[in-house]
Length: 361
Image 1 (cartoon, helix red, strand yellow):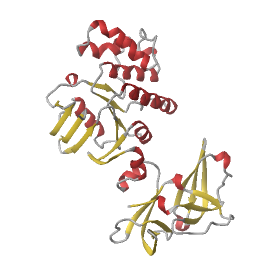
Image 2 (image 1 turned 180 degrees about the vertical axis):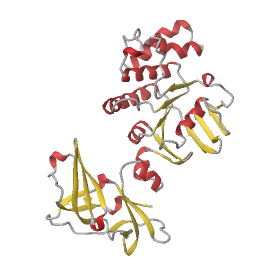
Image 3 (image 1 turned 90 degrees about the vertical axis):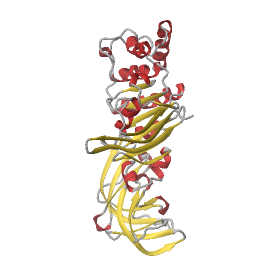
Image 4 (image 1 turned 30 degrees about the horizontal axis):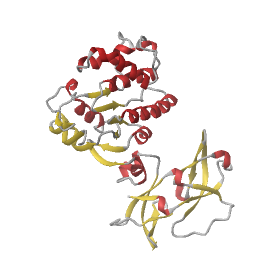
């Protein structure tokens, strides 16, 4: 049985439709990331599941039960809010125990459960502290312990790491994933951070304008986006408007961009009038000094002359902006830069990438 089932859920605020005919299911123990820009409907969807907002249409089932008429505290849902919502006048132990007291957990069992949860989130020994005495990361762990303490049917995390700095966010993202896996928690994570969504979720749902536009495994969402909208939102991309060229060889089609650059790509099922948008991910690009003899060109090979405009060192990676013919600009990401000769602005290069790595929309 699915732990969660939404069927044709719709929510309107006046003339604005926040969520439109959203349907999704979630299996036990799975983590689902809801990803999308601000205002796409992901938080409203979470609020409907939690019971803080009533849908104008559709149904919500948790563990096979229609919960449409149940109050939030009657739904056996664990919540971790963006600001953690810890009670400042309560100790860590009291915060973690709060939900259990109102969910009918026997009083004698609460202390051991609190101890178990704090050990799980690596806060053993901090039972007597107050939220004001904790760091942001520690407060996040307390909120997670409280959400898991009642053994909920489903855990809802609303931007759980957004209040933390970048380094701590990465560390706790790894911890959060391990904790959720260790307890087998069925979880929905709402986020606008694509790395967070792709790393935490067994599956990712992309939302836009209140609708689900794609659902799939993280690798599928990134490597095979269903639309230009998804490809633009997930990952970095170089975009070109183009029309079909004169050649088509062995499943690859030649396109000519609006700047006059020829790019080969896998032939799409149909491009109707021949006008398309081409997407090339920066990490799929190799940059070679133009003085180096170019490898023979074949059907699965793109090689374009360019000039380096800017080089930005970002730790282990270097972002290189290259100007192509017609003033088009191209971003390339070079990995393991210690092993690769450096580039400098003004340097002539060849931009190399496989036709198989070009997405056509």
